[in-house]
Length: 309
Image 1: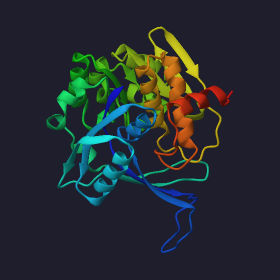
Image 2 (image 1 turned 180 degrees about the vertical axis):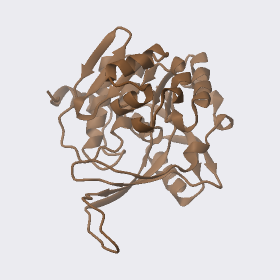
Image 3 (image 1 turned 135 degrees about the vertical axis):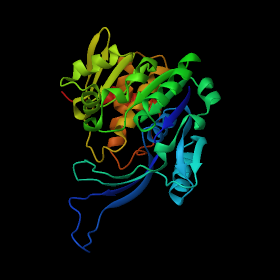
């Protein structure tokens, strides 16, 4: 399976555990500090590579040391980074994530070069030659630009998926409406569905996204599992019961597992189960790259682990 992940790339600096930030010049000891590649394109690429996909990733980063580190981490994971463009005058996107003891992760985020990616940067031939294009964070590059990219993929019989980045409270329908007719699989979380659809009910919001052109909406809901919404109806896939260390990258891991399942010819439900297993495996450690699992191990996890009731 040949996949191009395009869009947001971030270097995450994770600190755990953090119950509160010391006041003034105070200091406190922590158990772990790690740096990982992340983002709706970069983080998804990490798990896709673990699950056996051939992955090329595209987006914009800086020429700064942060960008150097991000490239090194992606290269080490076996991801082709040759499609990334590097900006001389813009920093690489980065986040500092103080991880709370329960796994929650507030964020201090620098947008950086991600918002500079445009049509002149798109590797059109690479997109046309891929089997699947995953566009992460289209709202950062604009709906019209995203629609052009996705339409090009569809014109060349490339399967498309999209994950959103912005919190639902910042979302509006016009930010994504133009690209929806070109999306086979839309993979938002519940907060994003409500925010971007501008609806009060999750199913109503997902159906609005379908009516605008999306082929399927798979809504992640944390511990409440996944809601699949199609023109034929809705279906719920429960989350796996695990001890959560850090939720960073879980949405990206779900996207990767879902995409890999679809590429293997599995049903949307089966793909969602694989996505949920990948997310559960990542949640048990620190950062988007946690876990040394592969596809057989993720499938074994899905078959043997309990789900939440």
